[in-house]
Amino acid sequence: MKNTISLFDFSKKINYRNELLAGFTVAMTMIPESLSFAILAGLSPLTGLYAAFMMGLITAVLGGRSGMVSGGAGATVVVLIALIKSHGIEYLFAAVVLAGVFQMMVGVFKLGKFVRLIPQPVMYGFLNGLAIIIFMAQVEQFKITDSAGVSSWLQGMPLYIMGGLTALTIIIVYFFPKITKAVPASLVAIIIVFAIVLGFNIPTKTVADIAHISGSLPNFHIPQIPFTLETLQIIFPYALVMAGVGLIESLLTLSMVDEITNSKGNANRESVAQGIANMANGFFGGMGGCAMVAQTLVNLNAGSRARLSGIIASLMILIIILFGAPFIEKIPMAALVGVMMVVAVSTFQWVSIRIANKMPKSDIFIGVTVALITVILHNLALAVLVGVVIAALVFAWDNAKRIRARKSTDENGVKHYEIYGPLFFGSVTAFMDKFDLMEDPDEVVVDFKESRIVDMSAIDALDKLSKRYSQHNKKLYLRHLSEDCRKMLKNAEAVIEVNIQEDPTYKVMPER
Image (cartoon, rainbow, N blue to C red; front, side, top):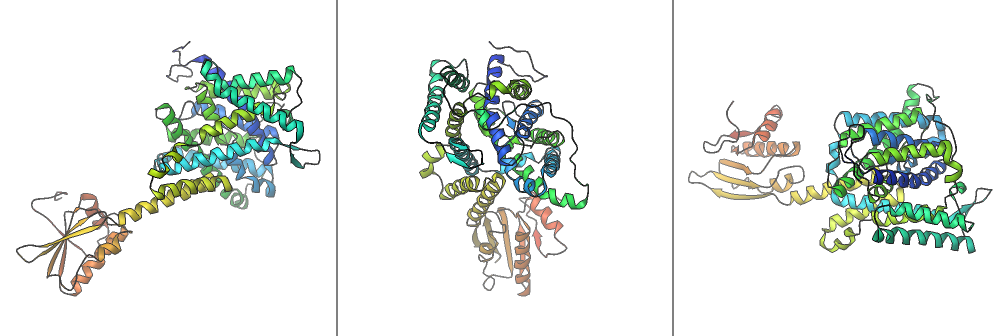
């Protein structure tokens, strides 16, 4: 039953049943992940749950994309592990606050639009690498830690029980939508497996085996650190990397949701919301975070298209912290592992494999490189940055090969070079090789009707070419320059010598 009442002035039609069930499902899948990464970083389990609550609530209300879920993501906390070990948890909170400030600045100065510069092969690599990480994190749940803190793989009957329950969860999640889509399949799977384990008193690994999750409301707390320049030097690089990793994952997730829902989110608004959420984390004892791809996909697959599910998921986590811990701690990990394994498989961009033989080799290389860096280093910011740099270099190389010159001599003995293709740092060498200085007449015209001057390297090349002709008492003229090219040369006239020739029949820029 659909209702058209708006929630918090969010003008969207809301299916309250879908939103409620999706929010509950997201909360169930977010809890073990937040706990796992908090423990991995050597933090209290509540630090992870507080992050899940605050990130989820603030970004759901203020964020730039409905249907997107944020929480205490491992991608951001992983980059802070070294800081936690060397300086302690108070420095972590300070770094999270500073990272939030950086993210807010990105949104305020409207820099979120630069996510458009991320090519599709980088997106494929990012999602494929993330899918592998999510899947491998679930495989780790087949380990158990003894009282001495030593981890070992499950063996014998515990392994068979865990494997069987995980397989049952996967089967339910896969086949239940063929019966009905009225209720999220992942939630049904969790309830059924939970009921089986409880009803038959089956001994298996539960949420309580990871950590106990009961606690109180988060309290306001200013990080207890010396407010000195030395402290800033310590936390600055960590905060910068965390802000970058968080924003890249969040904005890529936003782009992914845009594609799935065929709608448009607001990258700058999301950046501000992520910043506010992380600042709140630092002051209220959370480990910080960003958008979570897996939970976002769980949310969308459960039918959510509004902000309400994210709000419900966050409030559900808070209720669990305050009152529901004894119940939630009994949920078998196999149910949550099965749900997340299905999410990992659906996150993987199988289409990238199917079209591999139709893609340029450079795009395949970019996608594989990004995926490998994501999986091996768990550094999403570095992976995406490397992918973008490689893509930019490939683009520059391809355009550098496209510059051509058509040569002709008119009835007055003036030689014309008609340039095709952009003139920039990658093509200046090929451009200079087109000219025959010794054989050319006294007057030479370089026609840029089909070309553009792009950067300082191009301006420098024209200056050098003009001076070479001048040294041989020959005159070089530039014709058909577009307005922005003329402006660029005008700004550089103090350091270059070029002659711009007006063409009476083709004026791109009028006389001023």
